[in-house]
Image (cartoon, rainbow, N blue to C red; front, side):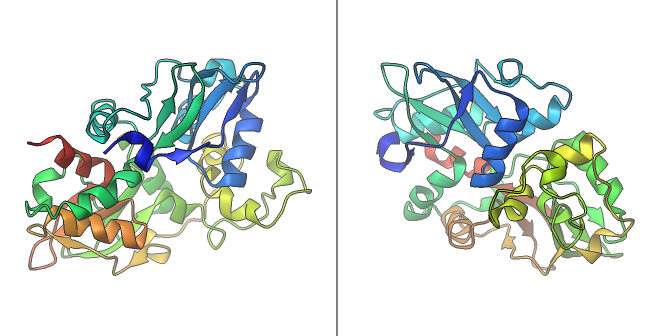
Length: 282
């Protein structure tokens, strides 16, 4: 199978020259976490801009300084195995698809590979493929501490455990920056989105709200993570077949799944990116 068979065609892009605010507006409007960047005059591919890049460089305004010019790319006739290897080796979550003329044809993310993995009926235990650190948070952890942990660990989803260490929930940065947690006192106009946009603004803003926390434009309430966590999250057992885990992620639109043992004790977290390793095996 080729990259062209699974890629999202004609993806939304950001244009150079441009600035941070323009990128944020595109991310918010389209609920994206990453965009190819192209030269406005020629549509030539320049690089990639991601939500994480914005978080890492909160004081940089010019897109020319923010864009990741050395980010890997693939072509539509490359194999899905080759694309999976690029994503894994670069710990990347976005892979632009560029043609021989240097124009963007599409983009692939780890989620685009889940259907292939699910259909391969791989019986190996999902636990064997968990690579990323798994850092649990206690149910009483304050939200501000959770955000600090996310920033330092560079992980944005955490299992939540009770006093006995048993899994009781899951929390991500998007859960923290949910409209039910952050009051809409920071309106879209306050952060440059304007009043002429539609109802998608606040929902899409969850994808980039952390940016404004990092630059001290908003504050989070002094409550524990148990107040906003996803309770009794869907999990997978350590011996669950890889393809079954991929099927759950695909059907539920999950980016990660906690892995537990038969006593509901947390063992690891499996992410979409981790599962790509199954495509590189003989």
